[in-house]
Every structure is written in structure tokens, then in C-alpha cells.
Length: 406
View 1 (spheres, rainbow, N blue to C red):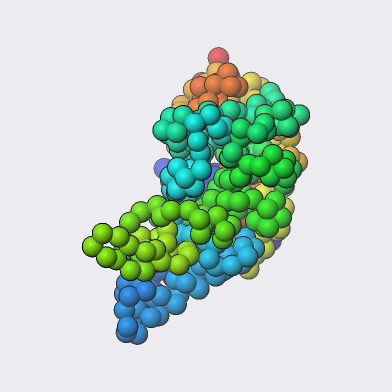
View 2: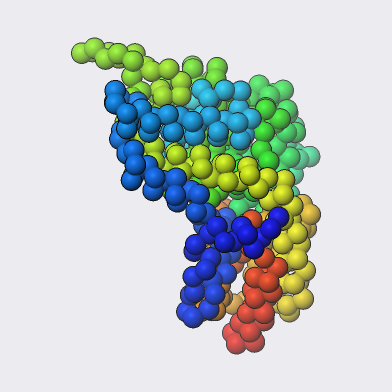
């Protein structure tokens, strides 16, 4: 990877913050955007903006073609069997909620169980809490070890005949742990359960093939993978999506409307009510092209190297503790505590040096409580980050420790 060339594609990376060159280490929350994505979206607004699917005129037909072509590119990117299996949503959270409100309401019964893990993001906990409360179902959690791995030895015992759904993250946004999703799916299917994979932290950073783990649903967001906000993806097996009721009612999701009833549109539009975020969808298509041009294997290898280097550099700082597994068993996320200094204070001092990190519970409060923590600092890496930026992080943290440590 030519990181210098890649960085030149991201205008924000040339900015200064508090008179320092920006070091952006918060891509796990949302990534920066390359010029091809910005230009693709600007071109829509400048040259052929019109609502999609409805207009029998040139602008609308061009916008519709670009939007639906983006769907095809997303389907290819994750190796879906067909475009019908790609539903555009606002983000990962909405995609998971869609499954909870449609498949969940139709299939979960009193006494059923929903199996989650202790490392889930709130977006893969709260929708299932709401569903369980409504349906009289029970949530059960696969525990983690102290070093951040799933207790796979307990999975078989938890997958009793009452578990109807397993919802699991492919990669933890706090620990960086990359989970054995293929094994989880195989065991869950063997027990008669459906599997939803939260791939928000995986799809932007590594090759993902939905047919390999054979998951039933998979969700991810555009804004974490060089695309715009307001566009996400739900992959679902066609047979499951066909059987599910609609999520929202209105225009575009219908085939015919009578005074007292309606029939639904074909997949995937059955789940896309109203005017879609088609400019953002076109931007996501451009982001997929950009990442594919670089190569997801190359991006994953680059992040593995940066993560290993970061953990090496940070490990020598007295009082700094990285949580989670070793570098070779995690993605590009390093969360840590440091000398009893509050993470918000650390993040503020780093910001004054132009270094952007995330501080808090990272929408994973139960996980932090499980680890005996209230908050952590998280540095996350992407294709545009460099070893020199890791050096700046380590050097600045050393000064933070000298200033605030006790």
C-alpha cells in the first residue's frame, strides 16, 4: 500500500488542529472520506439530481441507474447471492432494528431465547431487549474471558432448543477481538437458530464474504468505510426477507394500494419506504469501488501492522494497560487505561496536540462493567494511518502521564 498516495485522497487529513497536523485515530467511530466519494456525490447534486424510481425523464433515470448500480457493487463486495438480498438502511443500528421489528416480531414467542455476547455494542443489545420485553422472551449472554475472547466452550450448552436467534459482532469495537463467526453460525444453525452478524467494524477493514459463514443477516454502515452518513446495509437471505413483513409503510415499498389494504413491492424495495438516501447510496458505491481498488486484504494487513506497532509502543509506558487480545488476534482497535487518569482528560490533552481519539464507554457499557471499568481511551486505525502517527500518539501519551499521572 502506498499510504502517502492514499492520504492525498483524503482532504481532511491535511488539516491542522490547535496548530498541529491532524492525527485522526477515531475511524472505528466514523472514517474520513476520499475525494472519489465526495466527487461522486457532488456530481449527483450538480449534474443529474432527481428523485429515483419514479421519474420518466433523463435525470431521474440516471439517478436511479447510479443508485441501483451502487446496490449491485455492495452485493458483490460482500459476495451476496443477489441484489435482492441488499437492503439499504440508514446505518447498522437501523438494520438491526429492522430485523428485530420484522423477523423478530413474526418469529419470537414467549419463552424463546435470544443469545447475545458480553462484547456487543448497544445497537446489538437494546433492540433485542425491546423485543424480549414485548414478546416475553429471554436474553442470554455468551461470556467472555478476561483477555477478551468469547467463551466458545460454553456455546453448545447455551444453544438449547429454546434459542431462536443468535446476534454476534464480527469484531468488537472496544476489544478489537475478531470472533469465530463461521463456527458460531454452524453451531447455531445446528441448533435451529437464525444468526445476525453485526459487521460494522468488520466490513470496512477486512474481506467479508456472507456466504462463507453462511449467516442469515449481516449489518454494516457506510460512514465507517469511507462512505457518507445516512446509508447502511442489511444483508438478508432472500427466503427470510421474502417471508418478513415490511418495516415501514409508505411510498416505494408498495406494489398496489387499495382503500383497506396494500400489496408489497419486490425485494429489496419492500423494506425501503419513501425517498431513499440515494445520493448517499451512490456515495457508498463509490466508497466500495475505492476500497476494492486498494484491496481489502492489503487494508487488513496494513492495519494489523499498525496495531502491532501501536501495542508495542504503548506497552512500554508505565501504568498504561491495553484491554483485549494480542495484536495478531484483533482488528485495528486499541483501547486502554492509563495511570488512573480519566479517559476524557487524556482525550482532551491529545486533542490539544491534534490527535483525535475516542474516550468513554464506546456504546458498550455492559462490556466495560464486565471488565471492571467505567471508560477507556480508544485509538483506532484505518488505511490512511501511519507508523509516524502512532509515534506521535505514544510520545504525547508519555507527556500526558508526566503531567497528569499520579
